[in-house]
Length: 216
Image (cartoon, rainbow, N blue to C red; front, side):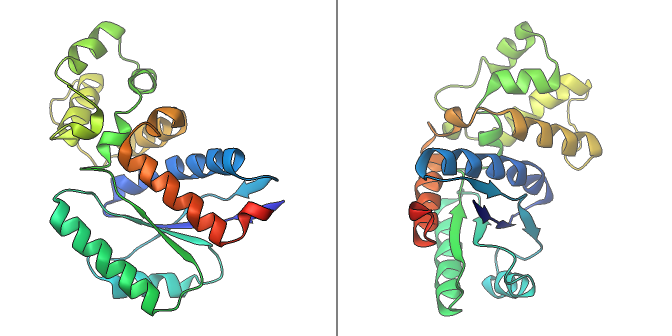
């Protein structure tokens, strides 16, 4: 059996609440599907760093060097030009640092909230909303969730309906508990249909191959 540990650098605290448990589950699914042998995936270690400044990311990683195999670098994809520049600088800095760990970008097409909307049945269960209400709230969601112009606002509508508050606070114990439970229930197969998540899946598979997971 091999043990795999990932560290996450995220943009905001709510991204951490959702992405850390979600990516741990996704990596478990990936290892079971892509590689032979048993892989124990540890809880994702979250690091505090400024995603705009690669030097702070590298410094944070240095402090826990030896405790993780893959650094997951989260960056929302909108606006594309800014996101791509941040990712380029981070990849260049990581390569120049000669780090032995793999760097894998986590880049939702626009915002992380789009991934939270990928499984409306899981969302309904977690928020305990009636199917009729879910259908009404989802009526203006056209195309795939990654095509939504403002996924953060769409998710807030669902949460607001559950709380009876039109503008729910994004940094509460309820929000943290909600995002954690949603991350544990979302069907990974639904996420894999989203291009940005599928890109992460491929990059993560390649990173683990580079670490020798293909051969046990």
